[in-house]
Length: 195
Image (cartoon, rainbow, N blue to C red):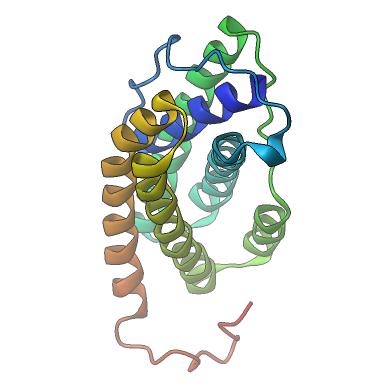
């Protein structure tokens, strides 16, 4: 139950926090009692969103510090700023609702963080923006689904409210990624563009 409310808040704040996260309200969590996270798809969605939010912050920090490309650096800084705001608001909400706050990085984000830490130059920019496009495509799909099918009305509302922000981030990520890949055939880099 506590993870459900927390996850919902995180997801909503993540999406809204991508641009500006002012969608969080302390009354958005449903007072239902979930038996276990695996039996509650809304809880799973919220937990995944909280962890994704944290990943956006950490990956953005790495890239903002290392990238020489102004567009990539600005995008990474936006991710750090917006998702930090979302995490802070979510943490406040979790405390208000007496919820557990789990924003641990998922394994795939830890692996990407390690890769980005060793990447340099154009490879860093490409790896980061490729991952941002892929992540935001998945997020838009998940939020679209939850905005229509979430069991909890607050989760549904939050997903609906945050979806436009995720779509905006996806568009921006796609634009930057397309510019990075323009003029270079995929796989033509001698440094290896693969994982």
